[in-house]
Length: 177
Image (cartoon, rainbow, N blue to C red; front, side, top):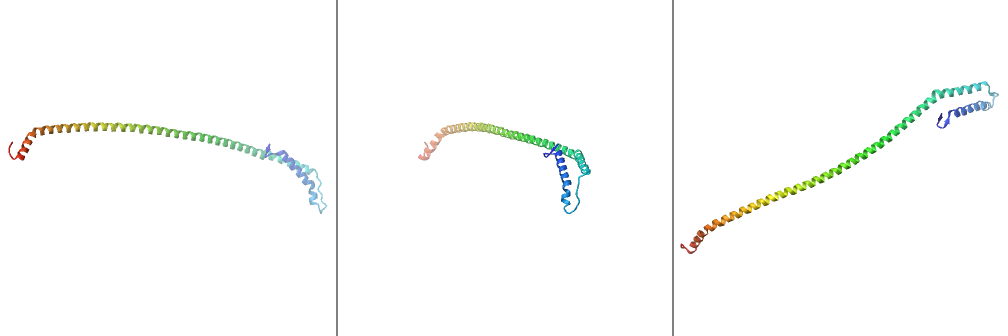
């Protein structure tokens, strides 16, 4: 029944008191130069009853529905505010979970990257090692071929050394030896 700290009954009593004071002292305010005086009679009580009935009807038809609508609106607003707070909390939790997921994904990505880099480096070493082994094998083969050719050349030169020595000595001496 309270509306902004003022009870309707108190409001009605105060208004009635003001109306009575107005009726009683109206003669003093308006009767300064005239002989008209206001004497309260039965109409004063009829007006007071009329006023009380109007207040009662207005309370039933107007004030109570408006107050109930205001109370419903306040409850709805309070519910919506609570819902907003809950949604804000949920959003913050989801945001934190999202950020944690991103952080975990980055950490896993970095770990995978490092693992792939190590694997790549090992593969590179293995390939370089294979190439070095092939190069060493080829180098050894080439050296062997060179040794064989050098040996063949030596043997062929050794076979022809006597012929060259005779030809040189004939040219130097100018006669056949």
